[in-house]
Length: 633
Image 1 (cartoon, rainbow, N blue to C red):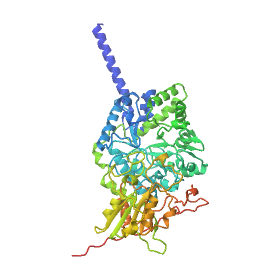
Image 2: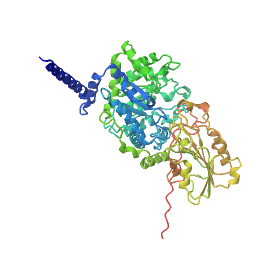
Image 3: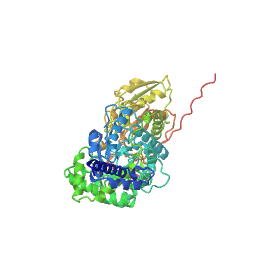
Image 4: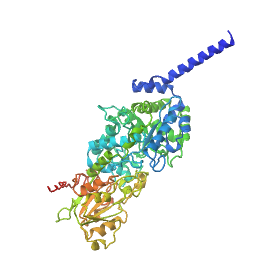
């Protein structure tokens, strides 16, 4: 045989080998008509250890260059609080960023798409001009599952509009102590309300027609994979200290803190995020009994468990002091994807090393990766990996803002309406002669949105995003002849000189998130108390409290005529004015106990010594004022 013939045969063999390799890589997993678990099994069989560990790694977008995504086969990227493509990034720039990263992931050997995740805890809160809904503490007041479903759908659509398919929401904590800095992320102290409002999952992911029996469910390109959090017991820590220890018996653990997770699994929640906190001294990120035996075993959860931000680092004290141990303990306990988010090479190399040393069995790696791939297949990420530019105008749409405004109206709680022996003063007349609006929170969009808005800890002022302040809402509602005067900090003689008909005081907490919000005193920051005193001493006044939880107000209640808990209403302050002036009635009922003094805490409905200022379920009501008929000509 000639050398030329040998070369030709070799070329044919190489071509056949390349064709067979391509066929093997295509395989079952590329076919959307195949059952999800068959696709998972097929793809898993094609992956090497490095590719599997890459899938278990979630990194911050700041690290997510094309080279890193391809070299480490990164399975997920996230934006931490305030992490954006650039300051004031447009929706298109968000989509461009995510799609650029996705193209890098798709160019790897197997072309497994990465999943981009973001905190969207009260709307798409990282994104400029997105609709910001009331925080969960206010939504719990509504006790309205259908409203929550609609909010979930609107949030999903705005998240998808930026090219992102994964949202770290809902928080289904049962906050038992308002001293906790994350209490505003909880719907209620009552697990039954929290369970009821897991209906938000149906809005976020799409409504599964039957019990999903633990299988993840995401219905189409306008829905997102959700993440119920933080598993489990984060709202029950000692003294409400964030990331602290929750001391509970089985009755409280499974009957109260676990209850909404049962609902979440039945609804097909795609992922569940582990809590920084501990249960009876055992860190949740290393709690095999609750992560694997109970959640994956007894409840049958088949999605993936994701760590919190540097959550595995905090298994040790001080954090990150023995990272190899933290990797081993968390993965063996049942964590599937690790929110690293920065030291990805240390995690990646460390996990591979532990597998090679048999400290972590290959079966555990395969289980974790199977769960991650199952979610990606369930959400159609292989078929539709790129963001859809046609959705861009959904961010901050008028329809969504109207929904948020409705949520504000339903979340307000009227705690007092008129001094003893005097008639109610709410609703206020639109045709009053002069109304003074006072306080630090009346004209501050950042304050009324709270934490987890644009920045992780929240912002101050009106130049960060689009929305309507409470002052704006009042001005837009009253009669054109009514004079509205704004005084952020009126003097102690202002009310006697001002000759006003009514005063509206809007004060409360300044924004915070997580540990920065932990408080052992829960007082209204200065100058809030002085503003209440100065406006209310000689004028009929309404005090509106903007806060993430009940705060100390007992010393001021007798001095004021009407008291409204507005919580953290978000971007649509017009909803507050809608109810103040009677276009709609007050309907909200407290989903949390309002204490008298902090030395009573923790105090919850049903406790033996229950002596609140306003009890769980309390809320006065008003009727809307019928619109005035225009005179016939």
